[in-house]
Amino acid sequence: MINWLGVGLSVLAVFLIGGPWYGPLFGKAWMKASGLSEEMKGGHKGVVFGGAAVAGLIAAIALNFLIGPEAGLMRAVTVGLAAGVGLVTMSFVINYLFAARTMALLVIDGAYNIVLFAVMGVIFGALG
Image (cartoon, rainbow, N blue to C red; front, top):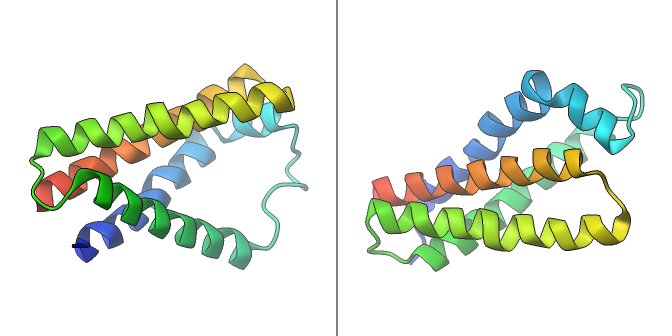
């Protein structure tokens, strides 16, 4: 059973965490590590933000299934951390190694996803 409130709050977390993360906290370092300039970043805002919302929705639904309907807070956070570290960040490691991306980019992107999925776990655990 899908916890739609948890899914919705998790999608909101994508932006509430991502905005500061890729803005004032690590935005300049991320752009440098990505090889982007201020003029190159972003693309079409509707596509970028819409795509992020859809991807966040799919990720939140998937995490909801992994956590299960009756999980307590500790299990939900543990599953969120396992997804952030073991699935998302390690997939980035594989891709970034083959793409010769920088370690700085990996740390920024990986840490964002670890934090995001842990927070999603907190949301699902608190609502479970």
